[in-house]
Image (cartoon, rainbow, N blue to C red):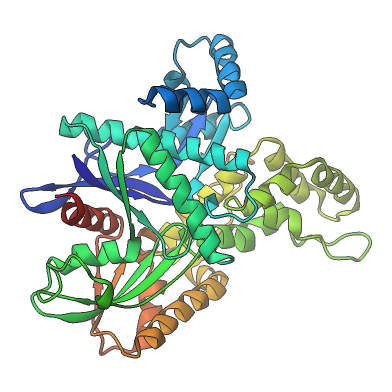
Length: 455
């Protein structure tokens, strides 16, 4: 059976064709979306979970040989954790986030791994790890979808951003796509195709068009923003080869996660001592605070938790004129609560899309700690990121040498009124703006394309 698979930075979803239309598959009860997060009691459990899914004997032997140390650790870990199978020690989605918040220092937690797949300089061991991590997360979605469909899924179209990273784009994209393909094939998805996510979102929309249009698809996801200007409508929809219809593409690693991180850095970190004066008269070093919130940057997280940062913070505690604030920061680091702080910023971002004020609940750091922020403060903190999105829209229109007939906005982060206002400011009020299913349009479009490829 074939499906469309949106392996997203923030959420994962899968679609199939039912009675001629793309339909999202319920994965958790009636919920079609699972947060892109994993928590394992032991990191090695991930490798053993993947090993159990490999059907080809020769491939299984090669995999076991390349992961021998991890598989030995997994066997020991099962004894220590008193579990019989590693699946009992791995949690996904909302359950993974809850497990992490309850015990942040005890297991291995990762959120939004798609943000890392195109990172420059990944060593072979890191590539292997991301293959396993992605495979485990894909497996969770695949098994739940198969349970609902009562069929085995073997063919898939997976969405991908125009660019996974902003630098070394061609090399980055190739690396990320290889990781996704290897992970998919390892869990039994024998035929794997890829499609740009903004085009997938547009294909879902195209099924509702009654006349031909030049459509600017603006897809603001959790990790990337992609823009495509595409010829769509009845004249184009049945064509298998659509390259001539794609008038322009742009994309960059700017998404909802970046807005969360920026909000956490600018609004929350001052309550942790980021701008506190020092006895020396020198400014407080910013990098520990920036690195702490940069949860989508492997290098930043490694630097934040290395010993040198601990030594620096110990010295700054002696030098700061506001030691209680910096002590909050040290406590956050000791308990590995930086992911939870960014999560609080994400919830605040969502709230500020519909209300003028928000108080961030940071009780897990300190009882009663609830910094306030206005919608205007949020808009100001987001100004640089919004400008980058504006540049992407302008660039795709320049590539196409034409203005769109309408704008189709999709992606979870596109729900923000700041994005809609940005489009209005750039293109004027005369061009209609249509809102898609902000979370489901990419997955649905991938299902539409899967039918054309495999149906």
